[in-house]
Length: 223
Image (cartoon, rainbow, N blue to C red):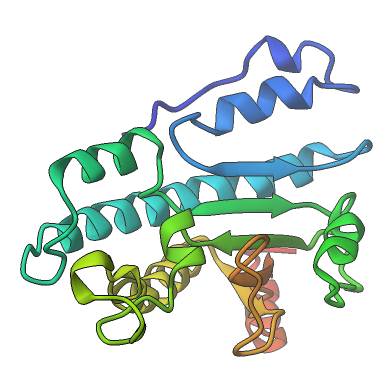
């Protein structure tokens, strides 16, 4: 369990809080979850990004547990030695990366990935997901995929890639449904860049239907 953090010294100056300190409260160094935000971030935006980071932490943990379990299949990965598994754990190559971009840095991301990320919503956040390096760069290495190499010299990273792909969608949607966040994929199917991203999602708060709001007005529960 991640420790819950309360109001800290970073909030002493509420008009100009230390965002770097606040982000360190949200994120653990053991997990590849980063927040990218420029000057002028508001407390509301910070709270939204904290909610996103907490949800992503659960997704990353599920991914890590599933990948480690996948690699225990010796028949499927006969060349993956215990030393290699230990190396992957030590280098955190069994953890996916998630980068959270707020309104102040989405333009920088757009220039880096050459994808239109413009949104009319000033409170929207963008999340970039990428597989751990071995899976991101060698996703094509599957049984019989490389005829020039002998099977004994090829670790089938692509098998793990195929096995973990459905889990990302399942756990990601599940995590953000609980947080009342809607997600839209911004990169096209088949549009990936192993160095920068596999998926790019836009996240925003779900809005209640108008008929629901009117009902709440009548009941006096919400303005």
